[in-house]
Every structure is written in C-alpha cells, then in structure tokens.
Length: 240
Image (cartoon, rainbow, N blue to C red; front, side, top):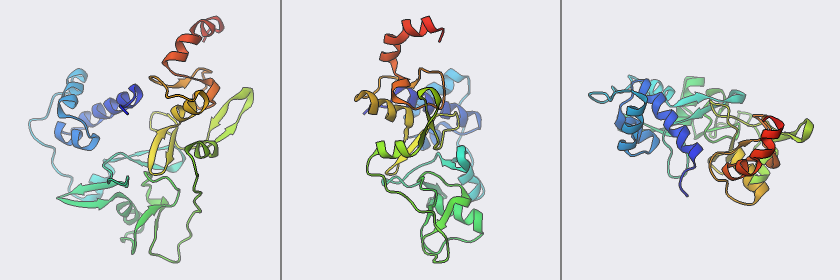
C-alpha cells in the first residue's frame, strides 16, 4: 500500500530536519529509505543546499546512536534509524551492525548486556536507556507485557473515555504530537487505525479529529478527506 499524505509529509519534515543538521543527501536517503532524487527535491524546496561531500562519521557508536533518536511522550525515546527485516532497531557504524537496544542498555549501565537487550515498556521502537532490560540477566525485574490479539484491542488499551463522548489517547505520541500505536513490531498512526475501525474502510488522506480535540481518537469524531468534505457545511455552521 502506498504511503499516505500524512506519512509523506512526516518523512519530508524529517528530510528537512536532517538536512538542516548537516546530513548529506546520500545518508538521509539511506536512513529514510528514499530515492536520492526525492531527497534532493525536498532540500531544494526548503532552500538547503546539498553538501559537497559526505558527512563525517561520528567519532563513537553512542554519538551516532543519539542522532537517530527523538523524545516521545511518557518518557519513551523513539528510534528513527534503520530496522532489520524483522523490525528491530539497528544501526551501522564503521561497517559493523549494532542493536540500538544494546547500545541503549550500555548507555544506562556502562556495560553491554549478557543476553539480548529489549525495551521493557513493550514498545519495540523505544530505545530509552532506562527502559532496556537484559534478557540474559535473572535478577532484573521486567515489566509484564500483554499480547494483544488484534490491533483494535491494542488501540482500546491505550484509550480512556472522556467527557462529551471524546476518547482520550493515553499511549505514546510522535515529536509533533500525533498518537502512535505500536503492534507486532510496527508503529501506526492511532487516528488512522481508529478511523478504519469505525468506518470499516481505509482513510483517504490525512486523518484528524473533527471535534477539535487533538488527543481524541473516538472513531466517530475523526475525519479523512472524504468525510471532511461531507461535514464541511455542518462544521461551518458550528464555527469549526
């Protein structure tokens, strides 16, 4: 399925962010899995000139690891770099592949884990150092993880009812405040999942709460491009 307009917009925002930070077109294209021509086009539109050469490799593994992270709500640290074919965060440095979770564990404890490192919070893309556990250690207390049978069940677990029929999101959010839903190793936009659950169809274009409450994921309050057009006269009458 081709990416949505919201996904493309988020990816282009990330291109501009990395380009402004001094990253080369080649490195940005590799990280975001984009065609270099598309990266060059976004750079040109943003007025950020291409670099004459590649970006120097950070001096240490941890320095490069930090460039692929961004804070998320709830104390999580979202991984923005590469993933393995099975969806695990990974990073390459000097032709060597490293687990992003192992690096995070070592940042917190000063030593590498004896087994595999993983996020105890249950969010696979979270690399917050304090959330990592050593699967080879027997003395560590690990946070119980619930295995949700469907993505809808996972969605329900991250919401709570609020006044006026709103459904408040209680899970992690992206750096720009969009609710994020992790299920079976993949991260989804919670608004799109809730919309599809309510309308029983894929949303068209961007999905946002028509009620005006940013954190609301009540399906009946969400609009895509088609429903916004249908509801436009009512919204205009209400001054929304």
